[in-house]
Amino acid sequence: MKLLARYLTSQVLATSGLVLLGLLLLFTFFDVVDEIGSVGRNSYGLGKAVVVVLLKVPGHLYEIMPVAALIGTLLALSRLVGNSEFAVMRVSGLSTWRVAGYFGVIGVMLALLSLLLGEYIAPWSEQAAQRYKLLATHSVVAQQFRSGLWVKDGSRFINVREVMPDSTLRGVDIYGFEPDGRLGWTRSAEQANWRGNQTWSLQQVVETRFSADGITASRRASQDWQSVLTPDILSVLLIAPEKMSARTLWRYVAHLKENGQKATRYELALWTKFISPFVIPIMMLIVMPFAIQGPRSGGTSSKIFMGILAGLGFHLLSRLFGHLGLLNDWPAVAVATLPLLIFLTIALLGIRWVDRR
Image 1 (cartoon, rainbow, N blue to C red):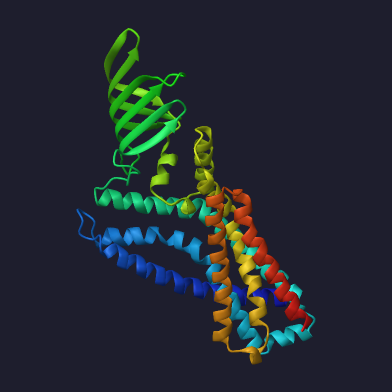
Image 2 (cartoon, rainbow, N blue to C red):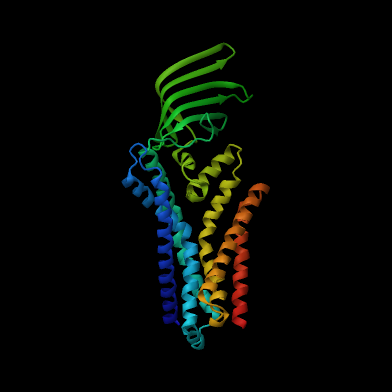
């Protein structure tokens, strides 16, 4: 049985690897076409465009790994069935449920690899690609409003007009409010540089205080400023929540909750981050019934089509639950987990049906 397990593993991994490579080349080609439109802006040449495309590769690997595992498993198992190798395995005492167990183990291993990729490599490379392109084109991070980025920090409101690719802030205005809701002071700085330990160094500071005795203003060349605003929070502007690391999402969700702001979208992205890698073993299990029905039930192309439809169905169901969850403020963990449990049940029922035939 160990020999059969190793053989099945090698077949599935080899086929999935080829599918992954093909899909990766396709996505890279699309990225190249997309970046060509930006070539020529300032110092952004073809060489720098290639660097940006390469930095996006880990993110694509993370995104397409479940699809590659689905198609790879379907192709490998269909080939074994078509060559009657799977029938020989069954005669040798290998049950359908044991094959499902092998696929589950392979899927969990790929899921752990995907989890590491999505947590440590893909967010960093995606952010690095965006920062590198912004530097090359002399652009700034896109802002949320015409007046810039607004952030709530306790009883203070912070307005940043420009966020540079190196996390330097330009045009910083801080508004401090008293417990009774009255504006107590304002602080303006031309620039803020990150020093670490929740501290920024403000440059060319003008502070204005409002009191019953009147208005007083003071100027300083530099001043330390402690704030919940960090480069990690600013990275939200660079990449979509779905591509952020779980650590950054966790901190940002905590920041939003501390300031009484809605965090549903980021909570959903956080739970999806933990759960989505384990889509891989479920995708591998759900295509088993399509692959092992035998040559008479249809050719490989029809099986691939049905398997892809199953994967597409999971994707659409997840998106549907995600939108409904955001609209109705459903618990993020339930919204992220329910589609997974539904398709796991469908996969197990499909394997049971094929095993009883």
